Image (cartoon, rainbow, N blue to C red):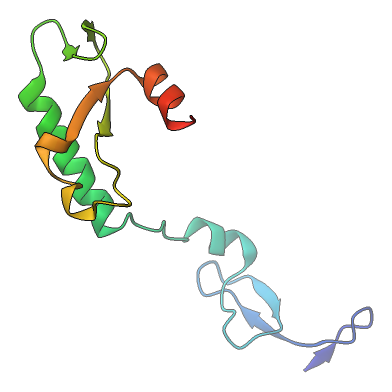
Length: 117
C-alpha cells in the first residue's frame, strides 16, 4: 500500500483488466483504467415503454402514410415528417396512451407551439 502525499489517501497499484497498464486504485471496485472504462461502457437501454411507443408510432404512421406523405387534419395540409400528439393528456388518461383514436398528426412546429402554451 502506498500513500499519496497530496491527499493523504491510501491507494494500491493494480493492472488494468483490459489493457494491463498499471493503475493506482483507491477502491476495491476499480479494475480498469480511465480510458478502458470509457471504451467498454455500456449504454443505458431505453425502457419498455419507450420501445412500445416506438413500435406503436411506426405502425401508426405506416397505416396513415399516403404517396404524398401524411395528411394533418387540423391544418388540412400534407406533411413529410409529422409528430404524434395525444388528444387527451397522457398524465390524466394513461390507459389511452396506445389508443389510435386518441392520436392526431401534427407538424413539428405546431406541436412545439401547443406543447408550450
